[in-house]
Image 1 (spheres, one colour):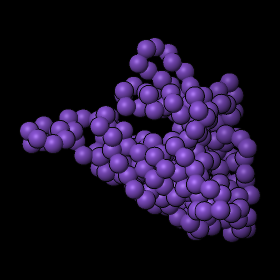
Image 2 (cartoon, helix red, strand yellow):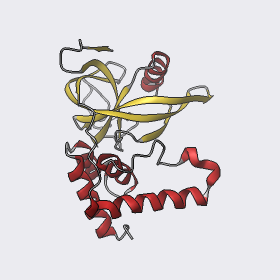
Image 3 (tube, helix red, strand yellow):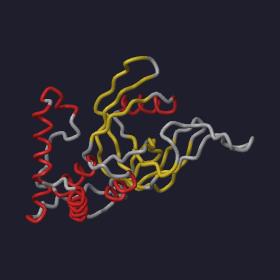
Image 4 (cartoon, helix red, strand yellow):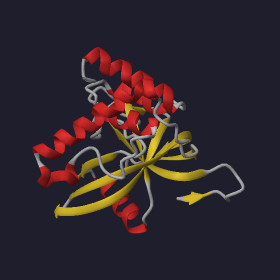
Length: 226
């Protein structure tokens, strides 16, 4: 994995990818249990080097590589994996090996990226050349969306009061950025009972204020803002 010179566009080559049936948002936290051979080595290398990997949301296929029973005798016998071209860098914050062949990791979402080229290696691991998005600008939560922010604060307080001993397991982790529209929208989007396809569209939006407005509309429809 190598980065381009600072004077050029921010790119990463041969970034290892982890296709999942979920969406990782910048600033979000993602726990994973790793047991597939193609990922055990990749995660071990990333953790040792302090390097990120890319989380992409599947639009077709399974998180676990499966044999395709209808595949022809020649060619790839595994089921097809299709994933979105916008993903999020993930940094491994903790890694445990509770037993041989199993890793339990906790990742933090960094910035978004767009895939330029992708390639699947013989053992099934996907790698890609990607262009990194710039870090999202902070847009202050406007007064008309303050209720959306305050509802998230109340939710966090309720979760803290319910089980104060497991604060580090909460989906909302400090530093809390209550005045940042993008941060508030991302945290709500992670918690919403919505399809991954919708969460992917929200994550890929370049406008943090629009993302917060759409999240607020969803909360209103679900009756979750009060």
